[in-house]
Length: 274
Image (cartoon, rainbow, N blue to C red; front, side, top):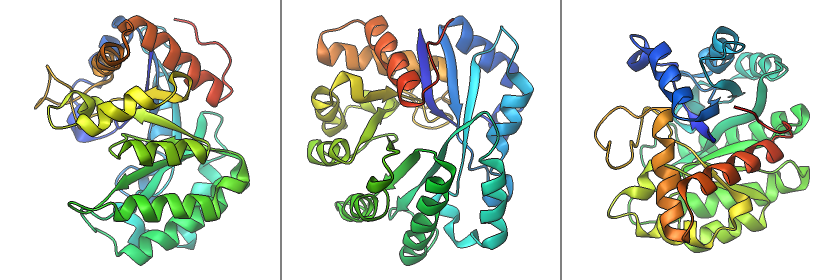
């Protein structure tokens, strides 16, 4: 039993075969996934809600939970109208998190000060909605700048909420992971943990307590070995579990069961059944 804690299946890359992608996931033992609600910007941040409404209740597909939020790439598009719409969408019964949100200094699609301002505003909205936050953090080349700024913002504006969050697609160092754990966050690992040059991620996966860990695909991105270069999909989350299991001398199935239990506990969903 597995849960993909972070995937983007609303895009055009899945329009031709989304039903089959979800059916393959269920057949592979993926019982649920978290559909991230960013879309192409604030106007389409209900994309995960639409998927949940379309597919939930059909036993041939995984259960779908979702989030809403503004990605740092689109931070420049944030305005009062967008925030009001997000507040409304956050009340949907399938919405269990706010995000992904955070800082991206690698692409800098939005100015960094704008990213920080939108980060702060979204912490206020998530606090009011009583939802944990999902963090995207990507520094510029050969730097820890986004990690330092992101963890500082969490400490200043979020930790006191007590709602916690997820450091999604973790790519930092062991020290960044420790700081995230100290701030009350779950650490989520994606397919890049299988990449040859990702030793820092594997080091973190060996350190993070198993009960504070989640697994994800970040589909359609970062397909794990042996699928690297292909479009990613939730069925491939088992490769992430297999890599973590190898690092910790446990089976893929044991990692799947534990991370599924972690997801259900963190989001207060009760026990998940197949």
